[in-house]
Length: 158
Image 1 (cartoon, rainbow, N blue to C red):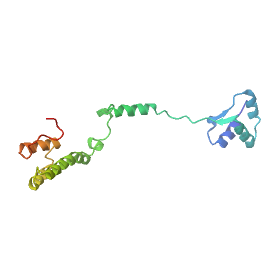
Image 2 (spheres, helix red, strand yellow):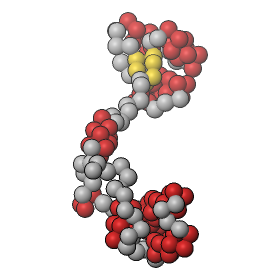
Image 3 (spheres, helix red, strand yellow):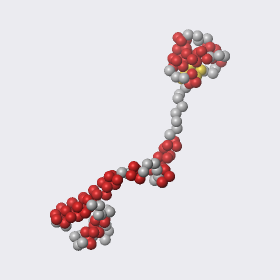
Image 4 (tube, rainbow, N blue to C red):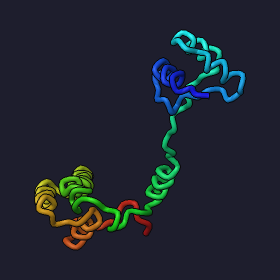
């Protein structure tokens, strides 16, 4: 039974491709569809459910979800997976901000507590700006060495 004309018209009416047009495989229904020669007949067949548009085939996101879960755990992030230069991934400025903010907060905290006087604070602030300290812990070590800090470090157990 040749239904190419009916499928073509149904595809136009349903707004899909001819490959997505489904015709009921029951012989009686196929015969009825074969008798449809006008667009109106095709519309009636669609309303009766003899002709339908198949659902679009989607792309499974299972692999993508699995890979995202692995990356969340820290996998698949080695040098072979990296694209872009070192500083394209984390710009120098972002690294600097991450480094300098805790140091400056620590200096401000010590000045407000009265541990550092304004003059000493300014000296260490300028040194921090000059990238002298690697981290907040390094700053505390330097302050201890120079005798400005005598107590145990905050948050540490001693």
